[in-house]
Amino acid sequence: MFKGINSVEPEKSDTEQKIDLSVSLGFRSAFLFPLQSKVARREVAIGAIWLLVPFVGWILNMGHRIMMTHRMQNGLSAWPAWRDYPSLLKHGTITFLGMVEYHSPAVLCCAIAYAYEVSWLYPISAILWIIATIAVPGYMSHYCLAFDYREIFDPFKALRRVFQGGTAYWHAWSIAFAALLISFAGLIAFGIGFLFTSVWFWQVAGFCFARVFTNKYELKGSSQIYE
Image (cartoon, rainbow, N blue to C red; front, side, top):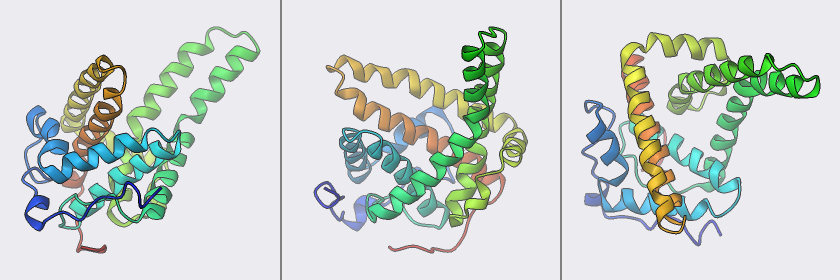
């Protein structure tokens, strides 16, 4: 199946990228990032098709966003990134485990609240979930640079980076949240459209946070991957 929906090798002119991690972050640049070229739109479509495969498709899409960011941080166009599926699966799985770690206190707190009928623990669980969600972008962009898993499993370091991101980080969240709301418009097309709009949303969000942290921490290197 990997080869069946693999990205067709695009012409070099189609991979030229006008919106990258060096541009000013705004609603327009972020919303257009995943749609700026034929190959970019093709890769959104491939991601949407993969979502038809439960869980694995979601993990592959996460790995795809990581590879897109890695390519840009290393001076390449974000596309094509739908290639080397074992690597996409690996990177998606590793970063997902980080999300599991960060959110596990909230899940545990909720489980205790349910098991022992301690209602006051539910708000604490919700707060812990929000904190974990806020912290996750604090490791994603750093991991993307050189695929160092040690960047992932330290929630306190990630949370510290988030607050060091300042207003730029919260600006990224405002754009990502707006994109999330817009993505639900895909439900109108019998729900199928949501496959495409959800991939678009995740790529918008990934671009926003990568833009903030790549520039804040100068996460740039020489190309370490294939052309």
